[in-house]
Length: 138
Image (tube, rainbow, N blue to C red):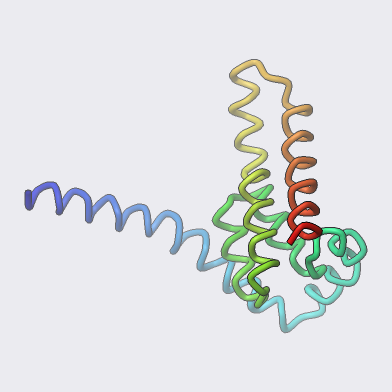
């Protein structure tokens, strides 16, 4: 029993290192620092018209882009310092679940012989449709 616990603890600490320390924490720090620069306000102003359909402020585009292109965990790390409310967090989380890690999954899809462009387009459009639906239904 002790061996099982030890092995589980080691695997848990390894996973924490891989996800939290190497991805989430650096992204969180970078996004926190960006809030003190003109980058976030510029991004917010540029993307506000589209993001308003989703019920999100313009700066919420950053975690969506990071989640889609880098990893789901990068998106999570970027969303925390933005201080979004429960509804906005739900919309971002739902969209990230539908369209995350697109480059990695495109490579996997290519290996399986799938049509990459159509799969990626379907995932991005489904994420947008779901985000809009949550915004207008709730």
